Amino acid sequence: MKNIVLFASLLFTIPAIAQTTASKAIVDKKANAIESKVIAWRRDFHQNPELGNHEVRSADIIAKHLTALGIEVKTGVAKTGVVGILKGGKPGPVVALRADMDALPVTERGDLPFRSKVKTMYNGNEAGVMHACGHDSHMAILMGVAEILSGMKSELRGTVKFIFQPAEEGVLPSELVDGKKSGAEQMVAEGVMENPKVDVIFGLHIQSYQPSGTISYRPGGDMAAVNDMQIVIKGKQSHGAYPWSGVDAVVTSAQIVNNLQTIVSRNLHITANPAVVTIGAINGGNRSNIIPENVTMLGTVRTFTPEDEKMIIDRIKTIVTKTAESNGATAEVKIPYSAHYPVTYNDPALVAKMVPTFEATAGKANVFVRQAETGAEDFSFYEEKVPGIFFHLGGLPKGTEPTKAPAHHTPDFFIDEAGFTLGVKALCNLTLDYMAMKK
Image (cartoon, rainbow, N blue to C red; front, side, top):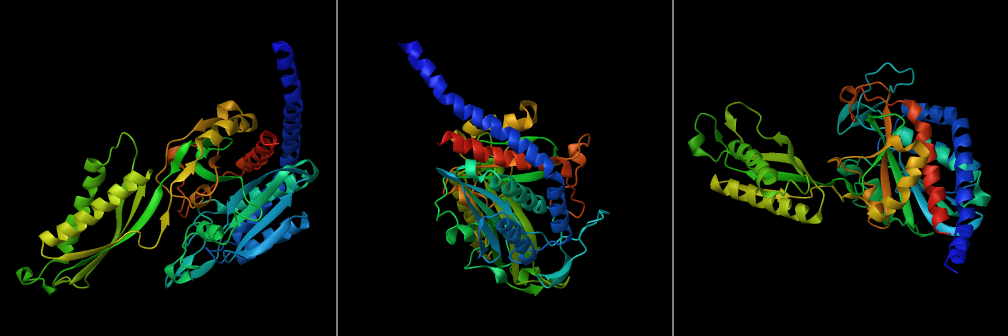
């Protein structure tokens, strides 16, 4: 009797396995066929970059493409975002796929034939505009995914929601939408995870230092939570030749910088989770012989657990106020000052289910678990609502030393376009396999 039940169970699972195998073959063929289109889209986006909440041209290209594919399209989400809804021919879950759209105020230095020559005014200064973090490739890859999956509409077991998101890098305080600095945070606030309600979300980020043709992932905390901070130290102004007649806010700020570094080295359980406390700007005074009354500092905090986040913020406030007090000064701490992103947290159970998809798509030897990263990603706002996976796609030309790869957010940033097709395949296969599991 047990053998009969087992045999019946195997027979029941065979159609699903056969279907997903057949779907992967279709995805491989179609992804290879549109590789040149994906690269052309990316080059166009790269040559015409737009800063956060200004992605008007990019959004228009995306919306027209999705509309031409027969996908239901909504524009103007979170100011310039685009959302496409593809309803499959069969019932099933709602799978969201996300790509970010914004560029950075960076002047490109390379000699690419499609390099950006765009200039703009940013924070009162002229600046170049460049896709220096790979968001141009993210848009192009998801456009390719939309083209493939729309062609498989009748076989889709569920609905796909394509989220093209503005302002992942954040915007200036003067350009906030409803007080929200992150495009993802604003999209969530405007209901992007509803109507239809999203069950799971997948997203990727291309990496300049990870070999092309590879996929990396991390269960649990993948990228750090971020809080920015402002510290204002108030002393008493005096002549630089008579420091005893004032309270030196500059010396106080120097002591605070040093004292803050003891949090990670002495208060954090560093074998459990990493963290970073960084002061990135100190501004005070305008002459060599005047000790200024005030000094303003800006910084960032990166953590991987809510407990560490609370501990570090509490310690910052204590150290700053008490150090200032010991010098006769006062200090105000605002944290977060203008931005807070949660931890980018990949649901471990979901990751365990989907790793075979990564391995079947890229080859087992080309898939690996990566180290946690203290960079931040606003994809975390979606993962607060539903289980998700944010994975990383290789963009380093084969044979290149990773340590010599131009870093993200720099004028020399470079991505190998040969890795794009793997990204298209991975997002397609994650969608199809997850739907097959939930039928």
